[in-house]
Length: 410
Image (spheres, rainbow, N blue to C red):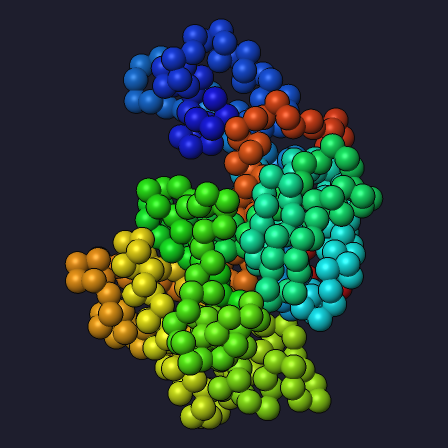
């Protein structure tokens, strides 16, 4: 019933009864329970155009229930908290060198971000329904363990176990998943290609991951490891990747490759002042481009060319309608896409290529954490009885606005 109201609301009790096949008494009882849990609310009278008393409409509420998605990436940690209607309550990101800090220190920082965000939700009177963590690597989702994350240098890291030891209420479920998969889900539900049943999402960060939606479902593979497209070999005589192999796709199109070509004095791991946050790196690249530095456009075209080479493989394999470019790909889409389209047309199978297009994501670097929060929302919709609402009213929540947006503050 909650899912029906979420999808088709506002709707009357009688409309819910007809659509679900439940009798009116059962619907009334369920409405009372969902109202008590703060998940649905009544809105103004609904006029169906017929004679008689107008019915009271039901809509999704969820303003007192929160979902938290967090992400650990190479050079930042991000957190997005939303309510069950998808309204963003908290959006923060801190620059953090997870690649150079090691798993123990990185998880300590992750715990700090989570505890701070949970405390903010507590002050707002929001009951947290769950936490999902996004990590760029192969994840054993059943145990919440990072099997291997090459760009972080992690192997066999029990993330869920570490969070269970933190100062977070033990009744909050915690799950861990791949960042690109979660970002793909965010794109499918609320991005530029929302509702497209066959799409591929590319992360566009230091590492390049892919999330594949096929037939409206996330393609996970036998062990949930599908989508590691950044480690497909595209150049047998290329550079060595962080995964240990030669010529991986991300060595050609990852953010580090762009920085190396466009701003060689600021490349990863070199120079007296290494900028870590991807937004700052992009801001510098965009400034140099505005100043007419020819290296920036040349680098973008070269990345775009390799982007198209890899995209042709994806189109031939998965036959998507849209390839959504996330992260820095989206910011430089005006230069990347034309070059990518040329290679895609040259290498992709005729027919499949003609029906596929590139699209720049509008979710920014927060796509994975937004998708992670969305997983919690979906789980709550599937099992609303798992949600316990506190009796104290929410304080200071303004619907449809951001409670705290702290993209670079610790």
